[in-house]
Image 1 (tube, rainbow, N blue to C red):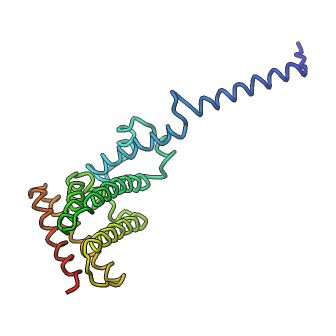
Image 2 (tube, rainbow, N blue to C red):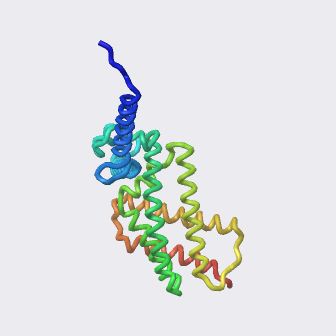
Length: 235
């Protein structure tokens, strides 16, 4: 038995194929009103949330792909559509935490900028930092789990610390009307010293299981910052 393929039948077959492709494309584009790119972004966010939960408790080195997929209820395939490896996820988690922290900090500093007294201007920023460090997951990921993973992650940590120091110095100098003229190098090292003291104080607090009250910890750091402000003033 032979099947005769006419021009008309070929046209119909082509139309059916195109319709099928169009339907598949439409299905690919949207599902329950959510586009493909939106679904990918949502899955990526689920992995970041799971990463923060796991890296902040069991740690980066102890976290496995099986643990991540179990927590997200997503397969490996969905992990690799957004991340190359677990280090990529760690970077994404760190950047998410630091971006959120910086946003909160900038909002606090903006509100506090109305005050003329340096202590009133500085304290809200310190409160923002120590409130963030009061979350053990934030503290562990941003100041422990990212250290020593790779040169790439070390550079990211150093860059974020330098940015934080620069933000602090910019804000501190804006709190002093008659101030000394400092070189960029002096500003950099004073900022690094303040950042180091702040982070070390916070880590002592975290490692003590938050034994001291947050107000006591803030007061201790505020004394250091006030001393710096006094040194920035012209004699």
